[in-house]
Amino acid sequence: MKIRIALIFATAMLLTIRLAAEPADIAELADKGSASAGGSRLSTPGFNLHGWARANFAALKSDREFNSDFSDPLIGAALQLQLEGNSGNRAHFYSAVNMEYNSYNKESPDDAEVRPYLKMIETYLDFYPVDWLSLRAGHQLVTWGEVEGIEAPTDIVCPWDYDIKTTVFEEYKIGVTALNAAFRMPAGIKADLVWIPVFQPSILPPEEVSNKGAVYNAEPDIVRPDNSLGNGEYAARISGEAGGIRFAGGFMYGYDDLPDTDVYPNFDEGGFNVDLVYDRVKSVTSDLAYDCGDFSVKASGILKVTSDHGGENIYKRNSSMQYLAGIESVNIGFDTYFALYAGQMRVINYSRPEGMYEEAIAEGFDQSFEYRWLLSGVIQRSFLSGDLLEASLRYFLSSSPEADEIDYTVNMNLGYKFTDEVSSTLGFVIADRIGVIRNMVILEMKYAF
Image (cartoon, rainbow, N blue to C red; front, side, top):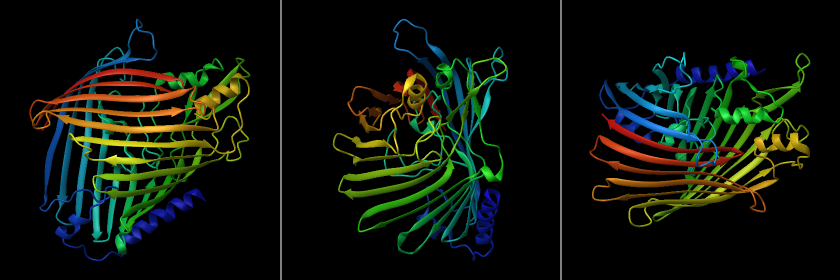
């Protein structure tokens, strides 16, 4: 059944291409670009090569002890090459690939011999068969939602890299290999359909994986779904504007980016085995935004329905809902960008965990309480003539109902631009989320070309 759905989905897209009329002029298409599919369109055929080189240092502490050693340092460099081109008014191509080097890289083929490694950021092809349709195929970053900041409830298509060490917030997002179709309909309505044939989970810090098995004195094994068409992910979104209000509604049938815990006895060696498995989840999203002068009022919400909607299995996540609402301003004065959102995450069919095992599992799912209060925000300001100095603060707080337990993530950056090409950034990350502590200091020098 799942394979049949995937084949029908792919066939429908191919028929759309086949039946499309001649493409419109590129000058008309340029004003109808899509953030999810379509991208930039160049007026003449050709290729452009650009990118950046970055030297970086990062040190991580996974505890609050002042005198303890730093762990998993990053001392190295990265080179990103960005190749962009087009074929007249028919297609557009973009690729961004990193070559990264780290003296302490744990992903090196041989830990004793440091080697550079390649990291695919994006590589995709845009195709414009008609003026109302854009197709994007390849490895890509897909962004949904209106809310800005560390926590964006409806930005669910792409997973996150929670183990990355950089001051660039956008690099925490991981691309997905997908076929993305954007349909432009009358009255400014846009529909997006996304097919992700291979599931890409979020990247977890090693200490978080270990913590999930610590209560059972076992090292967890991560079990991913098989790479088959039946295990693909599907997403759809409708967006538009009416009466000055931007709106969007989305649905995704996929996997939870964070794993559930499967515990079973080890009869050969005694004790327990712990598997981290990825469960199917259905997500419904909603976004609203209204601009009022220099300010915008925004709200985003999501309902996630898991396989244990009734809350009967302690080893599975319950269904949940989450929302954030607040204000945003591109300039509240003094060249300052500001955003502040508040909301709640609520567990559906919640039951209080009992005993050490249940409490540990519920904490790993971030479902120890029936609900949590949420606060998220961004403050960014430029200083000096020509905006040479920039300071930014991103934060997210999650509080228990009685505010006696607070999880937090705070990201502070101070950047200085020496020239249009050369810049330096000093960043700090202070985080304690679901029992995982990650405190980092990061220094980066960057040359863009």
